[in-house]
Picture 1 (spheres, rainbow, N blue to C red):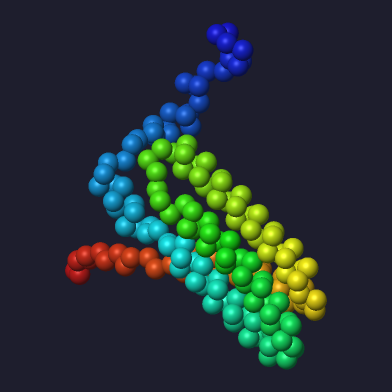
Picture 2: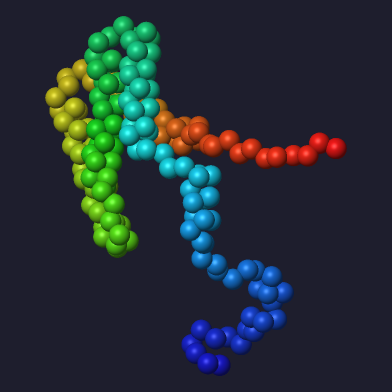
Length: 166
């Protein structure tokens, strides 16, 4: 035994360990190809989709209830998602070369986002006397899920291959 975590197992006898390729750094060309295959999605596009679907939920709420208070509650639900998300996107828009400072920046702005969202929820609960919680919460959930839909439906580049006809 060489150390406290060495239990006498020999990794060279494992047939799967020998078949696994070693870590290989990507070349600049491979990085470019990977980025072309998986283009990034703008956070502003996701926020726009969240806002559009929040307004759509408010319109559906109007069609179902014909109550202005329910429509305003639905709009508040969309705002509780979009406004803090926009604050986060704005806060982390400038990139940094240092991964540690980028992680700290992201955590800080995520904390700000959570605080703003919680403050908005408390504020609307105190301010709005006839708040429709179901309309607000359903709109919040729909708006949040639209981020996943945008990621799922993002445009992928068309890959053309040349095939020979025989």
